[in-house]
Image (cartoon, rainbow, N blue to C red; front, side, top):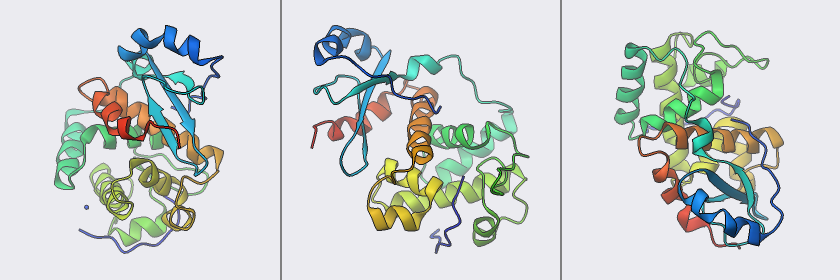
Amino acid sequence: MIANDRVQVSDDPAVPSQPDTALSSQRNETSASRSGDLVYQYVDRNGLIHFTNVPTSPRYKKTRGPRAFTQLQPKRLSPALHETITQTSLAYRMNPALVRAVIQAESAYDPDAVSPKGAMGLMQLMPEMAWSLNVVNPYDPKQNITGGVRHLRYLLDRFGGNLELALAAYHAGETRVSRESRIPRISETQQYVRKVIRFYQSFSRDGGSLVTRRFVNLLSPN
């Protein structure tokens, strides 16, 4: 869900973590984790979520990795919708797998979805946000995707390419994330970020290694 922040737009699964017992047990599972079975995470003191498939500290907790979602297929992904997602993503310099992941997390590919707070369509645009993005009909898949991708591109640029912060801002609002300079300590938002990243791993053509490499520089505990 896009929060109710008004922005100046430029032309760009909640699975709870499972506690690990000790670093030694993590090491015993290293070969499995390298094959993509396991992902480890921890939330640092700034609220940032760190991921790795080779844990280096007992602070990392085991969670379900990409393979847990190998049977997951985006719902209602017709050829026309697939083409819309691909072309719109590329137009805004986005990985289509990331856009598919956001749509899966936001609406499960239901173009008529409406949240209790009033967010609408595939990428769950709030009315004010839809208006600011020139989305006339948020239930039209092409308009909704164009608006959502455009806003996500803006957020990625706004937060220097930091995927975690951009996703948190998409969910909880740009203003709050900017003010706190971290993922807000809101359980729903933190779960949302984890969910989208896991879907992104699953939908990536290389089985999620692009996402794993994206986070490899964030793995050293602070």
